[in-house]
View 1 (cartoon, rainbow, N blue to C red):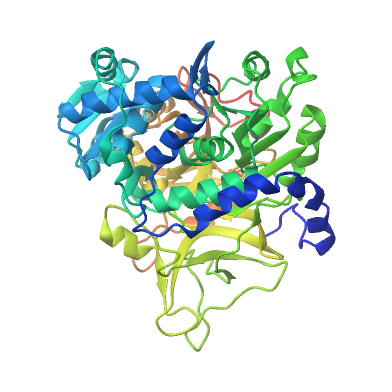
View 2 (cartoon, rainbow, N blue to C red):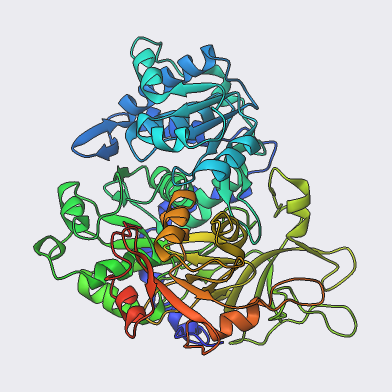
Length: 593
């Protein structure tokens, strides 16, 4: 498998960054201490926020659609929220579900829960029906704070959710609550759970991955303090959803590490992006790769010229876009990183080298893999094999006491992600499910995603979830879903091979309606191939490898359809559809990232 990223990093590439890093040295040294925080230390997200609020009370912490909150004002608001939540039974160790879109009240709710020593369950507001019910069930929450903007998602549940507290009622009750810091905030230890963040993992329905205060602290120190290196006068713009680790771990931790300003946007708008950047005086922003492509595909806008942005941080910026992205928007430094909700390590482009996901000082391995199973391949001696420098392989992260895997709420799911006795008896490794290129000097470049999950629109799509949704259409007998490459796009687009029930005919509009009703927009397949039968292995697993290789190429044995949009549904495939997808012309009415 190939990539446009350079094969290796040289010592000269790293040396170029030294002058800029020297300028940021004081902040880097201050934040480096966080890398040493142990699980029993009294350290938490709420406490870090509280300390900055006391140290920089008059500095602006948050800006949103013309509104501004100083650190003092935000801390007082958070404390009032915490008082109300405490009165409603939220205490240390409990879980509070949060189903809200991007707005200040969402961030206040999250920080309030954390200050009480409780855990925030960040629900994806794109989920519906059984999938959302499954996610809520995994939380075991004592309370679920739900915004009125998420009423449709709540109403889609098969049974009414229990213990719901409307976000508007919480905000109203907080108006008259005390604003003193909760005593519990200083008692929370780093090893306690902070967030439950939903990830599709590699198979099945969404899993709730655990983010401890310790892992978040290491992100603040390593990624935020040593990599992003925001300064006091910086304002970081975020239009990614707050249920994403990018928004709540990477962006928030970088802001607190630099004692800077968090600029929150309601959602991403390709046409309005630079206008909002200018209006909110942002000097940095966080991205996912597809966002960058959308910006590049937009016509040149006056607001993008002379913008104040000096750096962008994120993951998924494709190598072929890197130079144009920096040149067109005048961005001095791109802080690309690699990480996931559950992985016990992260890479960050601290040196500002082009076309790399950066370096990681923690132990990891890039190993040979089995293309059929997506698992690490073992040699005749039963041991794993590392790829050579410049080679592509499966990324594994070492798991030990200093680099723990916090896992999921499901112990069986957690164990399935571990590779034991990899290089020697007793060692343990976390399987990221990702292919990367080893670039030398502890640097990697992301290449592809393995397993039954593919990434599209910056989201992981679990094929089994999509297969289950398509199977609800009465004309579908079997469905196999996989990701396919479309030149000029990031990630993989969804494709389904289906067989029809006896005497049924394909109804593209009806199938699309089922998909849109049951799935987030980004998970709706773009291609559907109707076939007479689906090949299976001897263990009754679908042969997805062959299907992926075939992609959306014409096939005399099947009928190929493409997604036009919610209105027309699936229509007969036509030449140039893939180009339309890459250019953002199809599917129509698909919505934002």
